[in-house]
Length: 329
Image 1 (cartoon, helix red, strand yellow):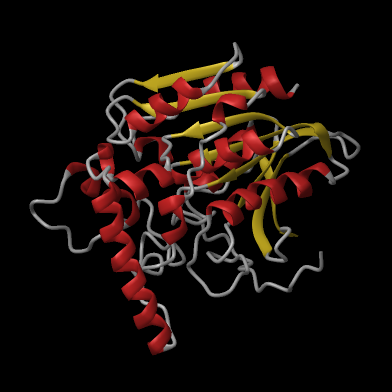
Image 2: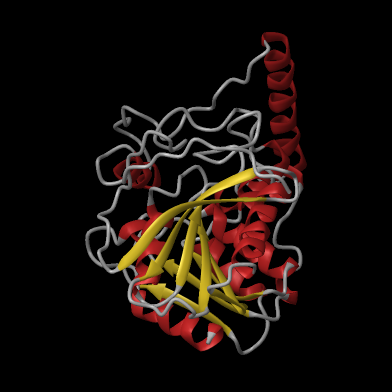
C-alpha cells in the first residue's frame, strides 16, 4: 500500500469559489491495485481538534475532475458539517495510473472503496458514519460500490448515468441488439490493433467543439458546462481530448447495477425531471428495496443543472444535508 509521489497543484484552481467556512488540503490514498489517488479534503472550520465527524467521499462526473462539480459538492457538504473528500479517479486528473485516460467498472468502483478505506482510518472521522456521492456516470458506480461495501452507510446518486447500460444498449436502449453490440465490438477490436501498432492510444475527443448547429439538446447541455468558463478545466477529459477510444470498452459487457436490489444502506437517487438521463435514475431507483430509499426529482432541471446549480440553484442542498444527517449521524 505504498503511495507513489504525485505532483499536486498547490494553488486553488477550481471552477467554483473557495469557501472561507472550511479548511482545505490536498491528500493522497492508495487503492487495492496500487494506484495512488489524489483528493481535495474539506473540513468544517471551528470543529474541535478531537472531534470525529461523519464523512463523505465524492466523485464524478465521468470524464470530469475534482476541480469541477465533485469539489463543489464536497466543499458545500463540508460547510454543512461533514468532513469530505473529492477525488480524481484512477488514470485521470492528478491521480496515478498508467496508461492514462482509461476506465474500468471494477477499478473505478474500487476507487470509491479505497476512499472509504482512507476516510475510515482518519482519526477525525467516525468510521461507522461514512457515505458517498456519485455524480453522472459516477452515480451508477456509487450504487455499485454501495452494493459491494456495507461500510457505506448512505449514498447519493446525482443526475446519474448507468454507464454499462448506455455502452451496451445506447441512449434510451435504442441500440439494444446483438447486432449493434457486435458492431461496437468490431470497431473497438480494430481500434486496439491500430493503437498497438502505433504504440499509443488514440483519444476519442471530449465534448464536441465547435458545437454543430444541429446538435441535440443534451450535447448543448454538456457544451454549456464543459466548454465554457462555467465548468471548463484543463485537466478535464470532457473539456479536452476525452478518453482513449478503447478506454471505456469494458463497460460494454460488464453490468454495474446487477445487485442494486441488495443494497441495505440508505440511497437517494437525485435527478432533474427534464434531464435526458432521468430515465436511468428512475429505473435504478425502481431496482432498490427498503424504506430507506428516496427518489428526488428536481422540477425543470436538466442534466448539468445538478452539476453546479445551472445558475438557478437547482441542487437541493438542504435535502441532501437532511438525508446524510439522518443516515450518518
